[in-house]
Image (cartoon, rainbow, N blue to C red):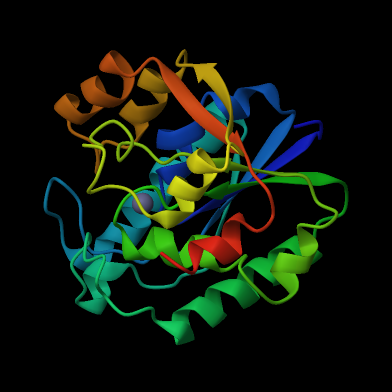
Length: 233
Ligand SMILES: [Zn+2]
């Protein structure tokens, strides 16, 4: 993508870095828009009220070390909505979808210069990722894609644990089957030290999976109708 500034639409805190942390290194600067950042869970089990502050502090370390900026929509993640994290059958929450769509639109409108977008493919079964992808399926954000360069990123670790069936949906199948999948891969270089920053979320074992076994990040170019096709999952 030929643009100075990369804007990553990130369903949760840490999704951007986990999925395309190394890809972002080639941009002069990057802004991560966190959508469902309100959370109550850490792997160390702290007071739920402290979780948001702890996770934002981890983002601040990324800002200081790598220069990525972060903004937060403050929408509740599934743990606060009583939805199982991988409950693919959960009904689409249209109220949340509209809130996410409006916030992203407001953030993008306030940008001064040119930018390109990285949008999640919702590769996996997480309802929050699916809602995030759907924000571009209609309304002003869908029109925006007529003139703003964008690429779709493959979420980790879902891609790594994919068994070929369970962690997939029609949007991704469509990309594959229609031959519209142009894969750009980026070597994992900085990932391990980046992931260590997110110590409230990532165990050593998980870091090994993401930055040991995993040697690449995947970013896809797709046609705009990827998003409308995604609605037909
Ligand atoms: Zn996520």
